[in-house]
Length: 193
Image 1: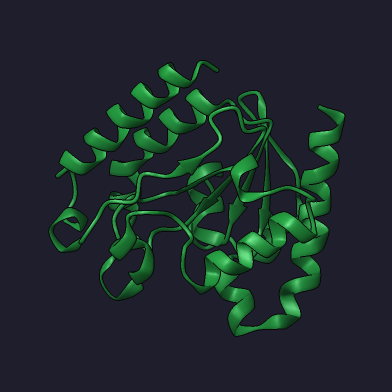
Image 2: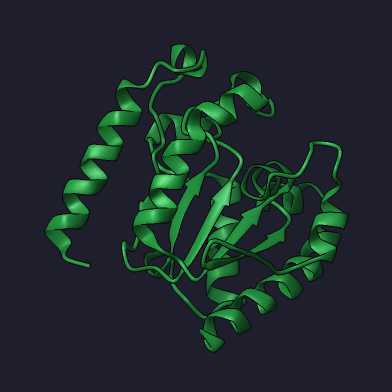
């Protein structure tokens, strides 16, 4: 993709998100967190929403969970953060790091769809239950275990692989082996094309 086209697209989207007042989340944010990464990425990660560090810096996955994600990208995928694209289902931090409401996710979903349409990844890794449900359209009652059991999902020309959110691993390290398994699936899908 042409670097000028990407810069214009990213700037336009970031400005649209900055001006967005479609839901109440804009009222309490410090900075919107549009997403970042390689415009030609074959792999995209989608999380739930920004945390305190991300809200302060205006960038996705820069706190402790982001450091864990960076390790996964390097150790399990053999890639660098600059090789992938990273976004969230909502672009503004929910107060108290609560789970975004269905309405908040619905208001942000067009931004996420625009990112997916522009980046055109081969594989999207949904980080956690909320991101998976938003991307796949499953009801909130669907467990992460059940969502992971059917990996990978085929959607609109790309695959979705569901795994744990990095923050979940910081709370319970026993999930790490499941993440490794899920990312091996993602890596194989990338290799096959």
